[in-house]
Length: 153
Image 1 (tube, helix red, strand yellow):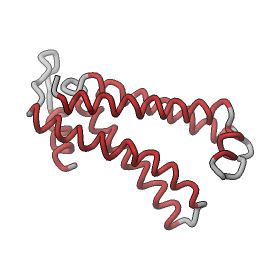
Image 2 (cartoon, one colour):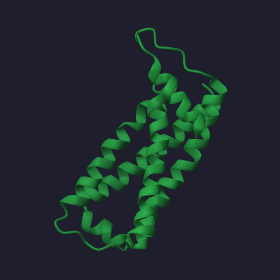
Image 3 (cartoon, one colour):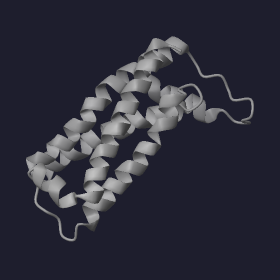
Image 4 (tube, rainbow, N blue to C red):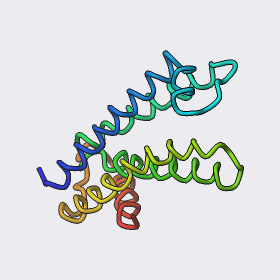
């Protein structure tokens, strides 16, 4: 395995585990988690619980791309795009919507995994070259699209 692909795998798995820990806190102890982070307690607390559940589900989609970069390259690229979207969302909420600046911690959390995973993904794709088409698939346009997105990163 390519050393950059291996580093990407480790980085993504570390992010998935970290996401699961945050999601578990949000699902099972939302008031504690919000208070710990200096945020107001939500009422009803179903919304932070649901956000934790969605974070957990989103993290599951990162796993295929981490484990097999050649076969699930689109998942790998979308993992990086999702981390960037999290950074953008929380930064924009604080800057433009005047939301509590403590929410920047959530953007910083995503940024922590965005930078190394984006670097390792780009290096792995450039080192490995284009993905061979899956012989079972009749159309490999999704592979070409994922390659173009990864090269623009």
